[in-house]
Length: 311
Image (cartoon, rainbow, N blue to C red; front, side):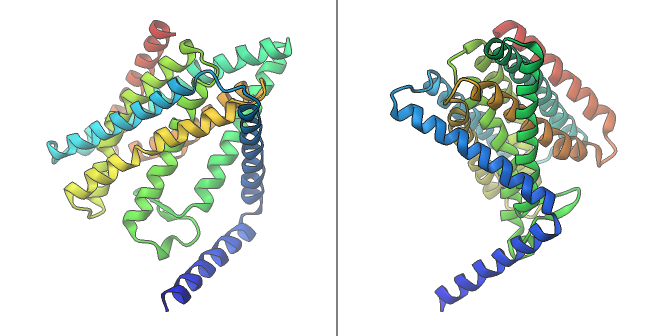
């Protein structure tokens, strides 16, 4: 009986996804294209690994991912003490995180990516185009995942095929997963060539902004009716996407040489998509645009200083 129910449920989800793909053919095609290219980069990395050419920054990349998990857990744990955070303060914290993500995408992903691609191609224009292709790939990937993964947002409600069949808590967990994945990927890609001047400021910035993000996740889960302790534990567990994403990022950029700038662009595109599509609208929906924007600028400036000091 349980097996039949599971099969029926799987069939229902599959039908929902196929129907969603028919309604959004271009997004579905973009997701297939991005997923195929990402898979190709991962295969190249595995081939290089078996050939004895491992990415030099594997250890640093994994440590960076674990640091992201640790700071997310730290921010979530603060929810045990901070039972009530005002909406304006929460929007300001999320704006701060958004500013750090935007600056990290610019200074620690796009600019190093262009420099690396220019060295490989011998042309500044070609280098920029290589990173632009990576940016487009990251946007296609996140747009497709956003469209085809059931999840929820406070601003627009439930999204994705089959969302109505899932518990609201799981929809929040999937939304958090989509948010944390590009951050982990960015840290993995940043260390994929063992360049500390690229990876260290990027990992530091992401780890710092994961603290207010972890607390914000607790607040969102509480608002969805989840008990305090459970909300804190779920928020902590959401940080596991950081080391998992770091493994993916290391794999993306660990193969042939041009994969490194493409991977940097991909991670930047994914992070910018998340900031523009989710974080900024969330900080502006409660009428706190000014403090959220000031928080964004503070995060941007802090990341700029970190990149200069640690890069």
